[in-house]
Image (cartoon, rainbow, N blue to C red; front, side, top):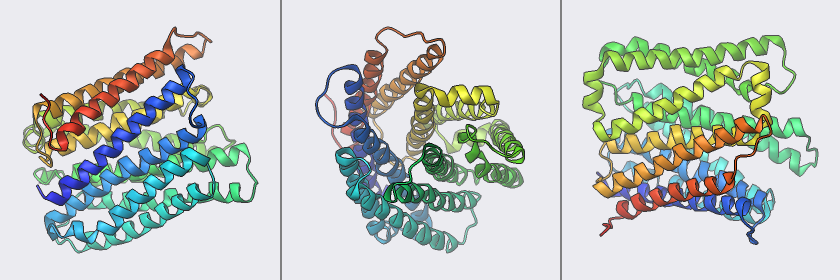
Length: 406
């Protein structure tokens, strides 16, 4: 384990701790009077920092670590400026979005973050092409980079509308969902899959199946954007394409599950017990997510889903925490990228329990909201779930920084 990798992972974990702390503050502002910060501004800062400061930062680090296996530890030196660039712009967005919402400072840092992402994508693509071994994970990494760049069109569209004061609801929502979709269904998902698939060299006979699975997911990603825009009047051909994309993703996932089941022995060798349990949980969360997307192709269900804020928030948390974040921890533990002790694992499971409680509460809030039923003390319960997640992150942060609990 290289010292550069360890330091960058520790920085990413601190960023996740900050994300969780802001989550508590946001819940306090809902449940109790809290005089500081504008709620909507802080929410923007929270979401942008979660995307850039936590998920993007740690995925960049893990992708550079993958590259370093073939090109040496110096890879981290080559990517140092880009990693610092993402980190600095992430903190800039956190501060300025929290203070001013969409203002001059926040838009500047957002733009700089996007420019940094372009440089990272170009550099990583070139370096990946220099790797002589053609891993089955490489197409996933390249697709992730393409979707990473594509997602910026949503951010630029939003900035253009705000700068020219031509904001209208459908345009605003279309731009926001475009950015979100190609971030979490494109960049985040495909980068994670690249890391996962690249570790399946032992299943050499599965090359053909892996290509089919990649084809299904990559085909589905672009039309699947309209799963987030079914509230707009869409041509019938687009609607049928959306249904095909939702089915394609489920089919691709079932093929991958079948591949795992048929190669259980090899999978157990690649992914040891502690990490494998977390990866399994992330897989369950992904299954729920894909089934929810398939169900949302029904117009009535789509209207209900996008009409209730707790359901939208629950879905976003399911993807970012349940799928992506749990996968990242499972991957790090499985690949022995950090020295993992008992208290570190304890912290992760406290964090995971908070995620599960949070998801159950949000979904209950959304479902009961359909009948205008209010769950007693729901905001206090959600605050409690946020505190549990923060506590878990604090425990494994303390241990990952080299400290030991008494």
